[in-house]
Amino acid sequence: MKLSLAAAIGLIALSTIEAVKVNPIPAPVTLQWGKSGPVKFDNNFRIVGPKNAILSKAISRTTKLIKKERWTPATWEEPIPVFKPFPTLSKRADEDEVEDEVEDKVVANTNGGGRVVRTINVEVANLNAELQAGVDETYTLDISSNGKGTIKAKTVWGALHGLTTLEQIVISDGRRGLHIEQPVKIADGPKFAHRGVMLDTARNFYPVKDILRQIDGLAWSKLNVFHWHITDNQS
Image (cartoon, rainbow, N blue to C red; front, side, top):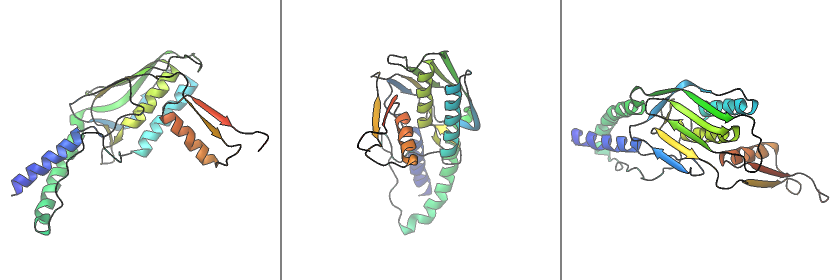
């Protein structure tokens, strides 16, 4: 009884871990998840890049956000995990005992077998390109099974998108730690050069915190133009 129950719960737990539950938005041009298992992030991981005021501030924001939020996806990508049946009173004691054993195995699995990311290196070919129509915003993000992480871009603006993607795929491991669910290779770039939103505060009142939240949302969606309608004759 216990053996079959443990096996069932173990398979469920491992299948849940192996399934990728989160993908970056918008969908990258190319996205390749590995299959070797989770890659753990050191709690004191660093992001290192060339000297540039905009890039340095972005690196600081990304590092703080990942370490602070430690977020867990609220829903799953396909395939949807299969959960065990709701327990009956007669089986509860046996299942509690088995779950303790499974939990230890699951935690060991999520540790990634010693694969730990301690540094993400950001490489930018041109640090002086201005944010104008037609600027190159492409980037690649590669986190390998051995814990090596790199973001490469031709301009600072592409590197910013790479950092945003990193924020989206590093999640909580459920034990106060961080990991990505599988090694990953991403190559991405915008489909349209102009990607913007207009916010009309001339005719509509928005608290400052809501405006800032809107800007954060634009960044997470990798938009590049914020059209702020602040004043007109009516206001």
